Image (cartoon, rainbow, N blue to C red; front, side):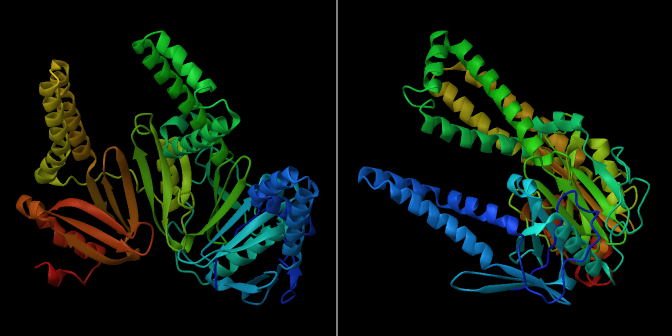
Length: 520
């Protein structure tokens, strides 16, 4: 198995030593003997609890000690059976007690570099380095490197990967390198330019961003399970149940208001906590010689990620509701060779922040003022389709409300039927307002949506094809959807409901000289 992704221990970019002697098999740091046994104990905790309970029942209390000793011994064996080495062109990892597995990562195919340091790792001066070769491959993980070794490894991998690289997006550092007012620290082999530095005051955007809300829901789930197990949760005799009973005693309206206010406060607090845990110390820097962007973040568990600039194909500016109402946005990279972590964090370039700061960061990454240029409207037919599609769902809801008002003799529900219509009109107007696209000599810029508004800026040279779609209703309206196909990001970036007379021109601009004959 080969992989290519490399990472550096957060905050250790000043190291200059070479990773290790070439071709010599080495063990992980002896300090991992303090981490592996703990991880094995946590891993087998349910089984250990069962053994302790069974031993106590039968009067054999030593069973638990024996099981714990076995788990600790397994952790020690794990350290003794794990080795790694660096050859002239590969990083190799060998592990396994009974069955030995060797994993290799070619140094000249590194796509990105990820380094994670948990609380235990940070306390012992260690880091977990992940080296990956592409989005479809499993990462090679060196879990017990020292901070200096991780820094030297990152510098070596990224330097080799950048040699002979073609000119990337934003190849010339622009004047936006100090977005956020940060300083310019030195790196292992080249001074880095700080492109974005999180301002602690921007935590105010946490309740409006998706990451904070997802973290809040996760904390609620874990906390709810803990409350149930502790006996103060949702049961009949639990604290939560008793609180609900007391609220019901003061009246339905007051109870509902109290629950809503309490839920709002809890969600806000948890969102703030999630934002702090995920994005504390967030910084985006650019290393000119290495040809990479480096992202570092995290409070308890710190993470440092490196993205090769030559594989960057553009950026995506996200301005969803309600973050847009608060004047915020967040930025992600459109790049190849990065395996997502399921939360969209691997390509994050900024957390929720002021929209003008995010726009400036995007322009700095792209190498010029691109995101804010005026976009071309798609005309009256596209506008009508925005209203029609928004009102279609509203009509269904109106019909349900009217039917309920008639069946249950509740005129108030009939009056409420006006609200979906008003909401549909506002949604259609918003979608029509934001819809648009533009083409420059380097980029295709496309924007669409309202609740989940996003602006995609994709490098035209990264296009591998173009798709023109016309549904039955689009043909009747005289519009079509033109999509840029690329190997990066979401793979497909559509320009929605473009007037028919502009379809051929846009397709030819995306893939010059290849599509004109099919659109005549």
